[in-house]
Amino acid sequence: MADEMDDTHHVELERLRVRVAELEQLESENLQIQQTLFEQKAILELIANGVDLREVLTGLLQRVEVATPGIRCSILLLDRKGTHLRLGAAPSLPAEFNRAIDNLEVGPENGCCGAAVYFNRLIVIANTATSSLCAGFTHYIEKFHLGACWSSPIYGKDNKIIGTFATYYEAPTVPSDDELNRIERVTHLAAIAIERKQAEDALRQSEEKYRCLIEAIPQLVWTTEARGAANFVNQHWLDFTGQTLEQFSNTGWLDVVHPEDRPATYETWTKAVNSGQLYEVEYRLRRRNGIYRWFLARGVPVKNEQDQITGWMGTCTDINDQKELDDLKNLFVSIASHELKTPLTVISGYTQNLLRTLTQQGEQSFDEKLVHKFDRSLSRIAVQTDNSLALINQLLDFSRMQSNKLEVNCQENTNLVELVQQVVEQQAHLVTDHKLQTQINLDKAIGNYDKSRLEQVLSNLINNAVKYSPAQTTITVGMAQQEADVVVWVRDYGCGISLENQAHIFDSFYRERTNQNYSVEGLGLGLYISHEIIEQHNGRMWVESQPNQGSTFYFALPVTVPAFVS
Ligand code: ADP
Image 1 (cartoon, rainbow, N blue to C red):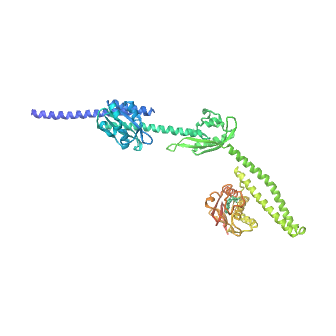
Image 2: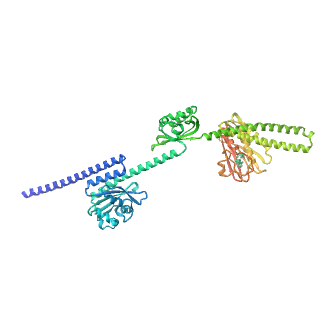
Image 3: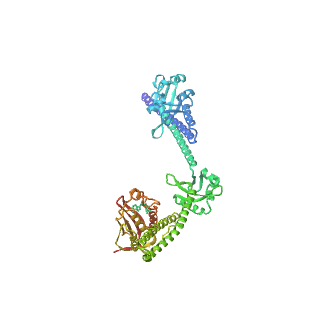
């Protein structure tokens, strides 16, 4: 009975002993966790406070060394090329040894750290005296009593090695599980610190780059907050306007915008800020000497990942010289054209008079040969005068287009069929070397059209067809209804236009230079102006062409009354 009692006590005692051991183990683990958390908190605080990387790493290693007396640690940082390790921190290792391992080359036999990077894994040298990896460091190993060394790579994002963490012991030894855990903890914290520093460096470099760029470009550069309050401008603005940054801020910049341009500028800016659309406006800015210059201001919204506008960024480009040049050019074209037009109109009038007189009275007054000669010469003068007048008119139209003043005066109920037929009749007298034919199966196409402008377009197309196709070939003027539009076309069998050049054919002063048309006169403005006239009618103009086969120019105009097919 007593024996039985003894056994039960014994079992119970054993159970309690196991339980106590378990609790002790738990408490120790708990303590370790607390210690780890405390360590991590301290290091993360250092990192968050932007403390220098060397200081953070030193702090980390000092904590590790205090927690395990007798060990000495180092952190080396891998350079950009991944070939050498630079000293990051090693608070307790002798300076002489630190100098020796600074700039250590990565390699299979280059010490514990060089090998850890080379083999991409933890290297444990349990006894440095017998390891071939330490052959180059025997002097230091003996001098500083470095009996064992373990080194682990520190991994950054994408598992890229960014450094090494090494632990040195006086006596030969291998790591326990706890020590392996410690290595993992320390490399993790070191990685956070190193990457943060690298990110900060990258950001600083990028900011520096943009700062240099902003000051290097000749433009005035500005930024604003999301709601449009200006908050930064580069030195060029301050130098140009003489404003201080405070004077410029918020809406202060408007003070140096010309009073006449201010309301429109403010309105455009407010609209852009409210809509989040691109901001673009031209205004005059007052220079510090009181003289205004024209600028083109452009701004774009800056957005965050949620697509919300966080601010605006923009530039002001000095366009004063360009603007003055444009104004001067337009003034020149307009004055020159008017001055040239008047005498030519007079010459044209007198020539027509002479031609008429010659036809009526010539036969009685002169001999036949002389009449023929006069008639030919006068006819040439008349054609050349008309050509010159047409060119001058093109220049005038161009100059109007530059100042947005090419207007069309549409009249309601204009019959396009009649108009096209009239132009073809007029042109038939002039187109003598080609066969001009029509393909019109409509009676009426009624719309709001500017008759003289559309005559100008069609004459231009027929003239081009004549100019750019060989004599005796056919030129067709056609017309058809296409849904709500009426389409007019002029087809020729001439030199045609390459696909590449078709893209530019409606640009101003564009002329295709080929052997065939090299000597053909023209300014390259006819199609540009025609295109604008058709657009002002809310129509479209386009071309279909094959080199050496011919071209068909089309324009489509809206009709108010559906076209009648005859
Ligand atoms: P231009 O006064 O030079 O004829 P346009 O604006 O009327 O000016 O035409 C621009 C250019 O387009 C011409 O120089 C010519 O190269 C090309 N072009 C226009 N019409 C035709 C056509 N029917 N066939 C071939 N090329 C043409």
